[in-house]
Image 1: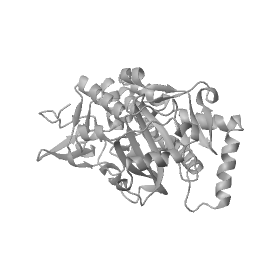
Image 2: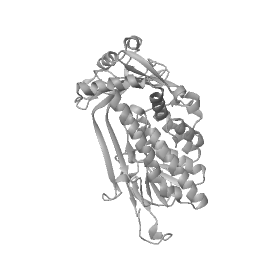
Image 3: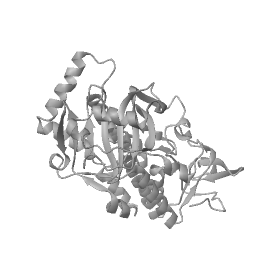
Image 4: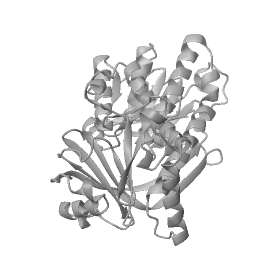
Length: 406
Protein backbone atom coordinates (compact mmCIF):
# COMPACT_ATOMS: atom_id res chain seq x y z
CA UNK A 1 0.00 0.00 0.00
CA UNK A 2 1.10 3.61 -0.30
CA UNK A 3 2.53 5.30 2.76
CA UNK A 4 -0.27 6.32 5.17
CA UNK A 5 -0.95 10.03 5.46
CA UNK A 6 -0.50 9.91 9.23
CA UNK A 7 2.56 7.94 10.23
CA UNK A 8 2.04 5.83 13.36
CA UNK A 9 4.11 6.87 16.35
CA UNK A 10 3.52 3.78 18.47
CA UNK A 11 3.16 0.06 17.78
CA UNK A 12 3.96 -3.28 19.35
CA UNK A 13 6.50 -4.59 16.83
CA UNK A 14 8.53 -2.46 14.43
CA UNK A 15 9.87 -4.52 11.53
CA UNK A 16 12.82 -3.13 9.59
CA UNK A 17 12.81 -4.56 6.07
CA UNK A 18 9.96 -5.02 3.59
CA UNK A 19 11.19 -8.13 1.84
CA UNK A 20 9.44 -11.51 2.13
CA UNK A 21 10.67 -12.14 5.71
CA UNK A 22 9.45 -8.85 7.12
CA UNK A 23 6.17 -8.94 5.20
CA UNK A 24 5.42 -12.53 6.22
CA UNK A 25 5.99 -11.76 9.90
CA UNK A 26 3.90 -8.58 9.60
CA UNK A 27 0.99 -10.47 8.07
CA UNK A 28 1.10 -13.31 10.58
CA UNK A 29 1.24 -10.95 13.56
CA UNK A 30 -1.58 -8.81 12.17
CA UNK A 31 -3.82 -11.86 11.92
CA UNK A 32 -3.20 -12.48 15.65
CA UNK A 33 -4.06 -8.89 16.55
CA UNK A 34 -0.47 -7.80 17.18
CA UNK A 35 0.10 -4.28 15.87
CA UNK A 36 3.17 -3.78 13.71
CA UNK A 37 4.78 -1.39 11.26
CA UNK A 38 7.15 -2.29 8.41
CA UNK A 39 9.87 0.17 7.36
CA UNK A 40 11.44 -0.43 3.94
CA UNK A 41 14.31 1.63 2.52
CA UNK A 42 13.41 0.99 -1.13
CA UNK A 43 10.23 1.48 -3.16
CA UNK A 44 7.79 -1.38 -3.66
CA UNK A 45 8.67 -1.55 -7.36
CA UNK A 46 12.34 -1.94 -6.47
CA UNK A 47 11.64 -4.74 -4.00
CA UNK A 48 9.52 -6.56 -6.57
CA UNK A 49 12.20 -6.20 -9.24
CA UNK A 50 14.67 -8.37 -7.31
CA UNK A 51 15.02 -11.81 -8.90
CA UNK A 52 15.60 -14.55 -6.34
CA UNK A 53 15.25 -18.29 -5.83
CA UNK A 54 11.96 -20.06 -6.24
CA UNK A 55 12.09 -23.46 -4.50
CA UNK A 56 9.91 -23.54 -1.38
CA UNK A 57 10.03 -26.09 1.42
CA UNK A 58 6.73 -27.49 2.63
CA UNK A 59 7.20 -25.60 5.89
CA UNK A 60 7.47 -22.27 4.10
CA UNK A 61 4.42 -23.03 1.94
CA UNK A 62 2.49 -23.91 5.10
CA UNK A 63 3.43 -20.55 6.65
CA UNK A 64 2.14 -18.75 3.54
CA UNK A 65 -1.19 -20.53 3.87
CA UNK A 66 -1.37 -19.68 7.57
CA UNK A 67 -0.77 -16.06 6.60
CA UNK A 68 -3.72 -16.31 4.17
CA UNK A 69 -1.33 -15.75 1.25
CA UNK A 70 -1.26 -19.20 -0.29
CA UNK A 71 -4.13 -19.20 -2.77
CA UNK A 72 -2.16 -18.13 -5.87
CA UNK A 73 0.89 -20.10 -4.73
CA UNK A 74 -1.17 -23.29 -4.56
CA UNK A 75 -2.82 -22.52 -7.90
CA UNK A 76 0.26 -21.54 -9.91
CA UNK A 77 3.15 -23.13 -8.03
CA UNK A 78 4.47 -26.46 -9.26
CA UNK A 79 4.98 -29.41 -6.95
CA UNK A 80 8.26 -31.19 -7.62
CA UNK A 81 8.78 -34.69 -6.27
CA UNK A 82 12.41 -34.87 -7.40
CA UNK A 83 15.33 -33.30 -9.23
CA UNK A 84 18.24 -34.42 -11.39
CA UNK A 85 21.99 -34.35 -10.91
CA UNK A 86 23.99 -34.49 -14.15
CA UNK A 87 27.46 -35.98 -13.79
CA UNK A 88 29.76 -37.86 -16.11
CA UNK A 89 27.47 -37.11 -19.05
CA UNK A 90 24.46 -38.84 -17.50
CA UNK A 91 21.35 -37.82 -15.57
CA UNK A 92 20.60 -39.31 -12.16
CA UNK A 93 17.29 -38.53 -10.45
CA UNK A 94 16.84 -37.85 -6.74
CA UNK A 95 13.33 -39.02 -5.87
CA UNK A 96 12.36 -36.67 -3.05
CA UNK A 97 8.96 -38.25 -2.55
CA UNK A 98 10.39 -41.73 -2.16
CA UNK A 99 13.35 -40.83 0.03
CA UNK A 100 11.73 -38.31 2.39
CA UNK A 101 8.51 -40.04 3.49
CA UNK A 102 6.37 -38.47 0.78
CA UNK A 103 7.68 -34.89 0.98
CA UNK A 104 8.20 -32.58 -1.97
CA UNK A 105 9.05 -28.95 -2.79
CA UNK A 106 7.14 -26.22 -4.60
CA UNK A 107 8.61 -24.14 -7.41
CA UNK A 108 7.22 -20.63 -7.01
CA UNK A 109 9.32 -17.51 -7.53
CA UNK A 110 10.35 -15.35 -4.57
CA UNK A 111 9.12 -12.30 -6.47
CA UNK A 112 5.65 -13.87 -6.58
CA UNK A 113 5.84 -14.69 -2.86
CA UNK A 114 6.65 -11.04 -2.15
CA UNK A 115 3.86 -9.83 -4.44
CA UNK A 116 1.32 -12.05 -2.67
CA UNK A 117 2.47 -10.77 0.72
CA UNK A 118 2.18 -7.12 -0.37
CA UNK A 119 -1.34 -7.72 -1.63
CA UNK A 120 -2.25 -9.40 1.64
CA UNK A 121 -0.95 -6.46 3.64
CA UNK A 122 -3.00 -4.14 1.41
CA UNK A 123 -6.19 -6.14 2.06
CA UNK A 124 -5.74 -5.74 5.82
CA UNK A 125 -4.59 -2.12 5.56
CA UNK A 126 -1.23 -3.13 6.94
CA UNK A 127 1.27 -0.33 7.48
CA UNK A 128 4.27 -0.65 5.14
CA UNK A 129 6.26 2.57 4.83
CA UNK A 130 8.48 2.64 1.75
CA UNK A 131 11.42 4.95 1.03
CA UNK A 132 12.17 5.14 4.76
CA UNK A 133 15.64 6.65 4.98
CA UNK A 134 18.24 6.70 7.77
CA UNK A 135 16.39 4.06 9.78
CA UNK A 136 17.97 3.60 13.18
CA UNK A 137 16.86 1.48 16.16
CA UNK A 138 17.49 2.88 19.65
CA UNK A 139 17.39 1.77 23.28
CA UNK A 140 17.61 -1.89 22.39
CA UNK A 141 19.03 -2.98 25.70
CA UNK A 142 18.15 -0.45 28.36
CA UNK A 143 19.13 -0.74 32.00
CA UNK A 144 15.98 1.16 33.02
CA UNK A 145 13.33 -0.71 35.04
CA UNK A 146 11.05 -2.91 32.91
CA UNK A 147 7.80 -1.18 32.03
CA UNK A 148 9.20 2.33 32.30
CA UNK A 149 9.19 4.62 29.28
CA UNK A 150 12.98 4.65 29.29
CA UNK A 151 13.11 0.87 28.91
CA UNK A 152 11.21 0.82 25.62
CA UNK A 153 13.02 0.62 22.29
CA UNK A 154 12.17 3.01 19.47
CA UNK A 155 13.08 3.48 15.82
CA UNK A 156 13.78 6.75 14.04
CA UNK A 157 13.71 7.34 10.31
CA UNK A 158 13.20 10.02 7.68
CA UNK A 159 10.52 10.08 5.03
CA UNK A 160 9.82 12.77 2.45
CA UNK A 161 12.22 15.10 4.22
CA UNK A 162 10.58 14.78 7.65
CA UNK A 163 11.88 12.97 10.74
CA UNK A 164 9.73 10.33 12.44
CA UNK A 165 9.90 8.15 15.53
CA UNK A 166 8.11 4.88 16.29
CA UNK A 167 7.93 3.66 19.88
CA UNK A 168 7.52 -0.10 20.19
CA UNK A 169 8.00 -3.16 22.38
CA UNK A 170 10.27 -5.05 20.01
CA UNK A 171 12.33 -4.39 16.87
CA UNK A 172 12.75 -7.09 14.22
CA UNK A 173 15.67 -6.68 11.84
CA UNK A 174 14.73 -8.29 8.53
CA UNK A 175 16.68 -5.78 6.46
CA UNK A 176 19.24 -8.04 4.83
CA UNK A 177 23.00 -8.35 5.03
CA UNK A 178 23.67 -4.65 4.39
CA UNK A 179 20.91 -3.39 6.72
CA UNK A 180 21.26 -1.39 9.89
CA UNK A 181 19.85 -3.98 12.30
CA UNK A 182 22.81 -6.31 12.69
CA UNK A 183 25.16 -3.31 12.83
CA UNK A 184 23.21 -2.09 15.87
CA UNK A 185 24.57 -4.99 17.93
CA UNK A 186 27.83 -4.01 19.68
CA UNK A 187 30.92 -5.58 18.11
CA UNK A 188 31.97 -7.17 21.41
CA UNK A 189 28.64 -9.03 21.49
CA UNK A 190 28.34 -10.03 17.84
CA UNK A 191 30.33 -12.92 16.40
CA UNK A 192 30.37 -13.43 12.64
CA UNK A 193 31.33 -16.51 10.63
CA UNK A 194 31.96 -16.25 6.89
CA UNK A 195 33.15 -18.33 3.96
CA UNK A 196 33.59 -16.71 0.55
CA UNK A 197 33.68 -19.04 -2.45
CA UNK A 198 36.08 -18.33 -5.35
CA UNK A 199 33.33 -18.15 -7.97
CA UNK A 200 29.86 -16.80 -8.68
CA UNK A 201 26.74 -17.73 -10.61
CA UNK A 202 25.88 -16.03 -13.88
CA UNK A 203 22.09 -16.21 -14.07
CA UNK A 204 19.80 -15.65 -17.03
CA UNK A 205 16.02 -15.34 -16.97
CA UNK A 206 14.37 -16.08 -20.32
CA UNK A 207 10.84 -16.35 -21.63
CA UNK A 208 11.36 -19.92 -22.80
CA UNK A 209 9.92 -23.30 -21.75
CA UNK A 210 12.04 -25.15 -19.17
CA UNK A 211 14.39 -27.76 -20.59
CA UNK A 212 13.21 -30.25 -17.94
CA UNK A 213 10.06 -30.73 -15.86
CA UNK A 214 12.34 -30.90 -12.79
CA UNK A 215 15.48 -28.98 -11.86
CA UNK A 216 18.83 -30.18 -13.18
CA UNK A 217 22.01 -29.61 -11.15
CA UNK A 218 24.99 -30.26 -13.41
CA UNK A 219 28.54 -31.05 -12.28
CA UNK A 220 31.03 -30.54 -15.12
CA UNK A 221 34.77 -30.02 -15.44
CA UNK A 222 34.07 -26.61 -17.00
CA UNK A 223 32.00 -25.61 -13.98
CA UNK A 224 28.61 -26.06 -12.35
CA UNK A 225 25.31 -25.35 -14.13
CA UNK A 226 21.68 -25.27 -13.03
CA UNK A 227 18.52 -25.53 -15.10
CA UNK A 228 15.62 -24.08 -13.11
CA UNK A 229 12.28 -22.46 -13.88
CA UNK A 230 9.70 -19.95 -12.73
CA UNK A 231 6.79 -21.35 -14.75
CA UNK A 232 6.11 -23.39 -17.87
CA UNK A 233 7.00 -20.36 -20.00
CA UNK A 234 9.70 -18.73 -17.87
CA UNK A 235 13.07 -20.36 -17.27
CA UNK A 236 16.04 -19.54 -15.06
CA UNK A 237 19.51 -20.86 -15.90
CA UNK A 238 22.87 -20.47 -14.16
CA UNK A 239 26.49 -21.25 -14.87
CA UNK A 240 29.48 -21.05 -12.55
CA UNK A 241 31.87 -18.22 -13.50
CA UNK A 242 35.02 -16.68 -11.96
CA UNK A 243 34.49 -13.74 -9.61
CA UNK A 244 36.46 -11.60 -12.06
CA UNK A 245 33.81 -12.05 -14.76
CA UNK A 246 31.39 -9.30 -15.72
CA UNK A 247 27.92 -9.54 -17.24
CA UNK A 248 29.20 -7.31 -20.04
CA UNK A 249 31.52 -10.15 -21.09
CA UNK A 250 28.63 -12.52 -21.67
CA UNK A 251 26.34 -12.13 -24.66
CA UNK A 252 23.19 -14.24 -24.70
CA UNK A 253 24.73 -16.41 -27.40
CA UNK A 254 27.88 -17.03 -25.37
CA UNK A 255 25.83 -17.94 -22.31
CA UNK A 256 23.67 -20.48 -24.14
CA UNK A 257 26.71 -22.07 -25.81
CA UNK A 258 28.51 -22.46 -22.48
CA UNK A 259 25.41 -23.83 -20.75
CA UNK A 260 25.00 -26.48 -23.46
CA UNK A 261 28.63 -27.57 -23.02
CA UNK A 262 27.96 -28.34 -19.35
CA UNK A 263 24.78 -30.35 -19.89
CA UNK A 264 24.39 -33.96 -21.05
CA UNK A 265 23.91 -34.13 -24.81
CA UNK A 266 20.31 -35.30 -24.53
CA UNK A 267 19.47 -32.20 -22.45
CA UNK A 268 21.50 -29.73 -24.51
CA UNK A 269 19.79 -30.89 -27.71
CA UNK A 270 16.32 -30.00 -26.42
CA UNK A 271 17.27 -26.68 -24.79
CA UNK A 272 15.15 -23.80 -26.11
CA UNK A 273 17.10 -20.54 -26.10
CA UNK A 274 15.93 -16.94 -26.35
CA UNK A 275 16.73 -13.34 -25.39
CA UNK A 276 17.53 -12.78 -21.73
CA UNK A 277 15.02 -10.80 -19.68
CA UNK A 278 17.47 -10.39 -16.82
CA UNK A 279 21.14 -11.27 -16.49
CA UNK A 280 23.31 -10.93 -13.40
CA UNK A 281 26.26 -12.43 -11.52
CA UNK A 282 25.87 -13.36 -7.86
CA UNK A 283 28.94 -14.20 -5.76
CA UNK A 284 28.60 -17.24 -3.51
CA UNK A 285 29.18 -16.94 0.20
CA UNK A 286 28.19 -18.41 3.54
CA UNK A 287 27.60 -16.16 6.55
CA UNK A 288 26.20 -16.48 10.06
CA UNK A 289 25.93 -13.86 12.81
CA UNK A 290 25.46 -14.84 16.45
CA UNK A 291 23.44 -14.12 18.52
CA UNK A 292 20.21 -13.43 16.63
CA UNK A 293 18.82 -11.52 19.60
CA UNK A 294 20.20 -8.49 21.39
CA UNK A 295 17.91 -7.06 24.05
CA UNK A 296 14.66 -6.22 22.30
CA UNK A 297 16.13 -6.62 18.81
CA UNK A 298 15.62 -9.87 16.89
CA UNK A 299 17.39 -10.63 13.60
CA UNK A 300 15.76 -12.69 10.85
CA UNK A 301 16.72 -13.82 7.36
CA UNK A 302 19.70 -12.37 5.51
CA UNK A 303 20.33 -9.91 8.33
CA UNK A 304 21.64 -12.89 10.28
CA UNK A 305 22.67 -15.52 7.74
CA UNK A 306 23.38 -16.14 4.06
CA UNK A 307 23.86 -19.44 2.21
CA UNK A 308 25.02 -20.22 -1.33
CA UNK A 309 21.96 -20.70 -3.56
CA UNK A 310 22.96 -24.27 -4.43
CA UNK A 311 20.56 -25.88 -1.98
CA UNK A 312 17.78 -23.26 -2.24
CA UNK A 313 17.88 -22.69 1.53
CA UNK A 314 18.05 -18.87 1.74
CA UNK A 315 14.38 -17.90 1.71
CA UNK A 316 13.42 -21.14 3.41
CA UNK A 317 15.79 -20.58 6.32
CA UNK A 318 14.40 -17.06 6.69
CA UNK A 319 10.99 -18.70 6.85
CA UNK A 320 12.06 -20.87 9.77
CA UNK A 321 13.26 -17.74 11.60
CA UNK A 322 9.85 -16.18 11.08
CA UNK A 323 8.13 -19.35 12.31
CA UNK A 324 10.06 -19.30 15.59
CA UNK A 325 9.75 -15.53 16.09
CA UNK A 326 6.06 -15.38 15.20
CA UNK A 327 5.13 -18.09 17.68
CA UNK A 328 7.36 -16.53 20.35
CA UNK A 329 5.68 -13.14 19.97
CA UNK A 330 2.21 -14.69 20.03
CA UNK A 331 3.11 -16.52 23.25
CA UNK A 332 4.33 -13.26 24.76
CA UNK A 333 1.27 -11.18 23.92
CA UNK A 334 -1.37 -13.87 24.39
CA UNK A 335 -0.02 -15.62 27.48
CA UNK A 336 2.71 -13.44 28.92
CA UNK A 337 5.11 -16.33 28.26
CA UNK A 338 8.59 -15.18 27.18
CA UNK A 339 10.11 -18.65 26.83
CA UNK A 340 10.02 -18.49 23.02
CA UNK A 341 11.62 -15.04 22.93
CA UNK A 342 14.36 -16.13 25.32
CA UNK A 343 15.08 -19.26 23.27
CA UNK A 344 14.68 -17.66 19.83
CA UNK A 345 18.35 -17.14 19.03
CA UNK A 346 19.49 -20.60 20.08
CA UNK A 347 16.52 -22.29 18.42
CA UNK A 348 16.87 -20.41 15.13
CA UNK A 349 20.65 -20.83 14.99
CA UNK A 350 20.40 -24.59 15.53
CA UNK A 351 18.46 -24.87 12.27
CA UNK A 352 20.52 -22.17 10.53
CA UNK A 353 23.72 -24.15 11.02
CA UNK A 354 22.12 -27.33 9.69
CA UNK A 355 21.11 -25.49 6.51
CA UNK A 356 24.60 -23.99 6.31
CA UNK A 357 26.05 -27.49 6.43
CA UNK A 358 23.73 -28.73 3.69
CA UNK A 359 24.40 -25.75 1.39
CA UNK A 360 28.16 -26.08 1.92
CA UNK A 361 28.01 -29.81 1.20
CA UNK A 362 26.03 -29.44 -2.02
CA UNK A 363 28.17 -26.52 -3.19
CA UNK A 364 31.38 -28.44 -2.48
CA UNK A 365 30.06 -31.52 -4.25
CA UNK A 366 28.90 -29.93 -7.49
CA UNK A 367 31.26 -27.03 -8.24
CA UNK A 368 34.68 -26.93 -9.85
CA UNK A 369 37.17 -25.31 -7.49
CA UNK A 370 40.17 -23.59 -9.12
CA UNK A 371 42.64 -24.98 -6.58
CA UNK A 372 41.27 -28.53 -6.46
CA UNK A 373 43.88 -31.25 -6.85
CA UNK A 374 43.36 -34.44 -8.83
CA UNK A 375 42.73 -36.08 -5.46
CA UNK A 376 39.96 -33.59 -4.63
CA UNK A 377 38.33 -34.13 -8.01
CA UNK A 378 38.39 -37.89 -7.55
CA UNK A 379 36.72 -37.55 -4.14
CA UNK A 380 33.90 -35.51 -5.72
CA UNK A 381 33.35 -38.28 -8.27
CA UNK A 382 33.36 -40.98 -5.60
CA UNK A 383 30.96 -38.98 -3.42
CA UNK A 384 28.46 -38.77 -6.30
CA UNK A 385 28.86 -42.48 -7.01
CA UNK A 386 28.25 -43.25 -3.36
CA UNK A 387 25.21 -40.96 -3.22
CA UNK A 388 23.39 -42.88 -5.93
CA UNK A 389 24.39 -46.27 -4.51
CA UNK A 390 23.08 -45.64 -1.00
CA UNK A 391 19.45 -45.34 0.02
CA UNK A 392 20.51 -43.72 3.30
CA UNK A 393 22.62 -41.10 1.52
CA UNK A 394 19.74 -40.28 -0.81
CA UNK A 395 17.44 -40.12 2.20
CA UNK A 396 19.69 -37.58 3.94
CA UNK A 397 19.84 -35.46 0.78
CA UNK A 398 16.07 -35.59 0.29
CA UNK A 399 15.37 -34.79 3.96
CA UNK A 400 17.50 -31.65 3.82
CA UNK A 401 16.29 -30.55 0.38
CA UNK A 402 12.60 -30.78 1.25
CA UNK A 403 13.26 -29.05 4.57
CA UNK A 404 14.17 -30.05 8.09
CA UNK A 405 11.30 -29.74 10.57
CA UNK A 406 10.89 -26.42 12.39
